[in-house]
Image (cartoon, rainbow, N blue to C red; front, side, top):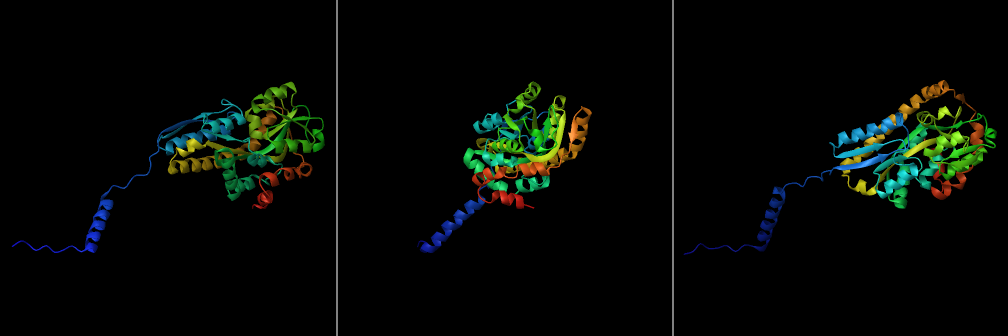
Amino acid sequence: MGIPITPVRPGFRLFCTLAVGMLAVLAAPIAPAAEQQPLRFRMGTVQAEGTYTDGQRKFVKLVGERTGGKVQIEHFCCNQLGGERQLADGVKLGTIGMAPVGATGSPIYDLLFTPFLFRDRAHALKVLNGPIAEKWADDFYKQTGIRVIGHFVQTPRQFETVSRPIRTPADFKGMKLRAPEIPVVVAGVKALGASPVVIAFPELYTALQQGTADGWEAPVANMFDSKFYEIAKYLSVVNWTFNCNELLVNDELWQKMTPETQKIVTDTWKEVATETSNRIAEEEKTTIEEMKKHGVQVLYPDPAPFREATKNVWKDFAPKIWGPGVYEKVQATQ
């Protein structure tokens, strides 16, 4: 007599099938997170050798170390890859991987040069590391396809002139003042009473020598590192606006980075940019003293008349570009 076979209930058969399936899932190896593939790309800046570029090289070094050598950045300073507009175009095209630039070509970030937008450097850092700046980065990406993953706040921008000092806005009358290709700066220069002349940074030294421009405005560190004290002998410290650079990154390159690598890059930039910003601020007084040694006359005019002369410049730009109320939110940030 054969062994009787007990019929298998359908429910029990389903249970066994599920159990076997679960065991197979548990036994399967867990898929590792995507490994970062090697990346090598160029990073460019217009700044001359100095504290600013020292900071960028530290960023490059740390990113290489923290990614185990998977991300290798070639750093080019001193306009080697072109002016700021050329750098921004290169990032968009992918011929340059990343670049910290002030003149992004976008009205969104051009407005950071609005006269007296920030009360001081601490105020600028607060805004640029907060939700307002996150919205700007999102809007910029939608408009251009370029990522902004960080900022750099230098010291305030001052006025450096060749033939005569600036004590009040009235002293700008008849003067040709170099302005970057940023509409709000051009408008600010006009409001002060000067005639703005747009000259690319690589051509500025010669322009000041030849009289194409009578002066310019920039952070003191930039003036010193580029040796403009050789020809421009008057410095007026007014703190009329801040130099804020955005770290642009090619989107295709960004997509090739794993989330872990992206975090390393953004965190490292913020760390080094803040450290370098603090260092430049600490060095500003020393830099001014060094400029005096080179024969530069330093003045500290009352900023109130300059603020009064430019108080309405923002109204023609901010509401249309940033939207209603954003300028006021920046001003209210504590």
